[in-house]
Length: 289
Image (tube, rainbow, N blue to C red; front, side):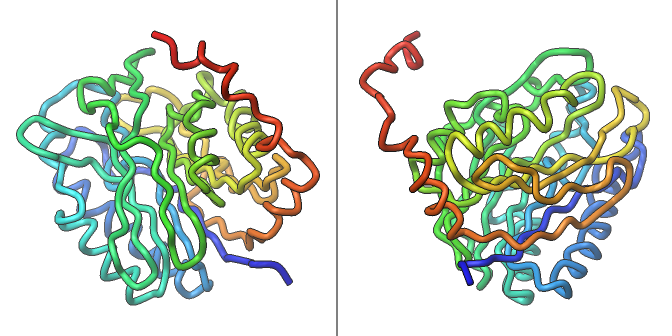
C-alpha cells in the first residue's frame, strides 16, 4: 500500500448576482462552502482546495472599486481565521483562495495554506495577472505575486499552489516541481469558448513533465449581471503520468474526492528521468528580458 492521501476539490456556483452588496455575497458564499467543507470532513478528506476567489463571484468581469471592500489580510483576516479553526477541527489540510490586502491599495490574488492542526503555513500570490478579453480585468484588482513558488510541508505531503492564469506558464509549474511539490492545486475561474480546449491539455502536461499530482478546480454556472460565459466546472485530479483519474461534472456544485498515491511519484520518476536529464545551463533564453 502506497502513501495514499484522500484529496478533495470544491467547485461551486455563485449564490447571488454580482450586482448585490459584496459583503452580503461573501457571507453567503462562505456559508455555502462551509456546508461542502463539512461534507468533505465526513468523507475523510485529508487535503482540500477551494476555487479561485471562492467567497465571491468572479468580480474581475467588471472594474469597480466596491470589490476592494472584501479584501482582507492573510492570515489575520476573518476568512482565513475561520478556516484555520475549521482545519484544526476536521484535521484537514486546506488551501483557501482569498482577495488579500497587504497595505493601503496593495492587493493580491492569494491562496492561504493551512495545516491539519490549524497552523497557518504560508501563502501563494498569483504571479501571472491577465488583463485581456472582455471580462478578465485582473490588473485593476491585483498586483503580480512576489513570493515566488513556495512549497508547503503539510501533514499529508508537500503542497504547491498555482492560480488560474498561472497554468498557461510552464515555467512556474517546473519551479514548483524543483521546489519539491508532490501535489499542486490550481484554483481557477475560466469560461467556455475561451480556454476550455486547454483545460485538459495544459495541466496534465505540467503533471507529466514534473511528475507530480495535480488538482485543478473551476467554478460552475453563468454569473449575473456580467454573463461573460459559462464557468464549465470539470474540476479534476491528474496523476504523475498525466492521466485524468477523476473529473467533476460540468454544471453543478460538487465535492470531488480522490485517493492519491504519493508514492506513485517516485515510481514514475524512476521510469522517466526528466529531472536527471534536464539541461538548465542551456535555458538562459527563458529568463532573458
